[in-house]
Image 1 (cartoon, rainbow, N blue to C red):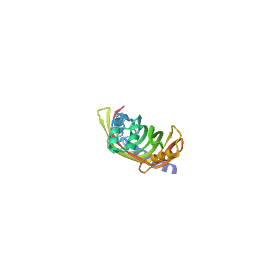
Image 2: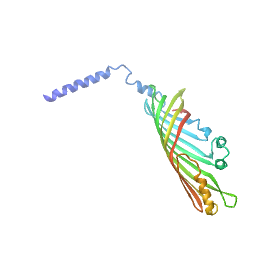
Image 3: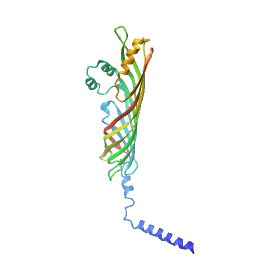
Image 4: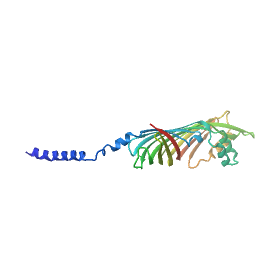
Length: 262
């Protein structure tokens, strides 16, 4: 008898749930999936603003739901001279040592940036304003970083240093994305500050054995290298030198990307 008393309320509750589901307006429960199925959920985008900087950046975005998506960006810069080198040289002025370093400096870099996006618009599905927490790994390599030092006889010698600097940063991006027709999208990175740490090691081998006086002059050149908020460790021997850097690292993401949905 007690089992039947417990069973009766369960049957009534189940019947009410069934009636509630059946009494919903027609199409209400399938509205979101129907809308979702009409929108391509994948996007491949090219960062247009990175091209003048000699960088090639692609991003893949996958829409997960109305409000959320995941994106993965890759940026590559083949080895080349500094972007806008002449403008940088003009800003440096007449400092001959700094100008000599910048004239010959060559660099390549790679950056990988995963992010989660939260879309603020009611329409969603990869449209409207969004907030995106992100992580960025970046690697910068140089094969041409030259420093001059006195040879003790009134002339100069040059040592070429090569190496790599890597950074790990995290940040928050505010952006907006709009459709341009059925397949094209425009993605605007409004502002994305990021901050973290970076460290690097650069080594150079002298073409000839350096005297103590030459070592002292090269050590002074390396220690005078002005890098704000960065710890430097300089080691100079008769056969070469090393420069180790460690400190905070940061930047700002901003720009426009054009993409296709599929």
